[in-house]
Image (tube, rainbow, N blue to C red; front, side):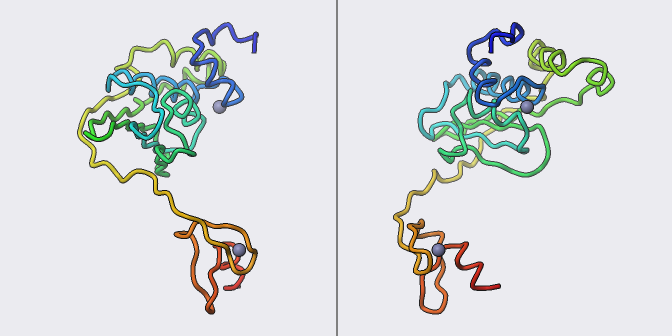
Length: 182
Ligand SMILES: [Zn+2]
Ligand SMILES: [Zn+2]
C-alpha cells in the first residue's frame, strides 16, 4: 500500500487495509468516526463502553469499525437498514450521544472528480460542512448477551441456547429447524 500518498494518517491507512481500498464511502465513515470520538471526548472502544448505530451497510461502516472499535463481532455496532449516511455514537453508562448526518452532496462535483479525489475532498472538509451534528442523550440498549451453547438434536453442532427452538420434542438450530418446516 505504498502507492497511497493521499492516505497519510496511520489510522486511515489501517482503515484502508481493513476495507481493501480507498473510496469516498470509507472516507465518510472515517470522518464520522473521528468526529464522533472527538465530540464525545472519548477513545476507541476496547469493550462495549462505546456504542455506534449505523444506518447503512456501505463502505463507510468499515471505517467506523476500525476507528471506533465498535464492531460487528463485539456487538457494539448496531445496524439499521435505512440507507442513510447517519452515524450515532454513544457512551456508557451515561448515554451521552452525538448524531452525525451527512449533508447533501454535490453530485455534479462527484461525477467530475475521480474516486480518490472525491474521497480526499471528504477528508479535507470542515466538520460542519460535511455533517449535520446533533448532541443528545440516548436510551442505551443492553450490552451484548452471552449464553451457553447446547447441542442441536439434528446436526449435533453447538448452538447458542437462545437461538434454538423446540420441534417434535427436539432442540433444533435455526438451519435444521428451517429444513423441518419445508
Ligand atoms: Zn469502499
Ligand atoms: Zn442443527
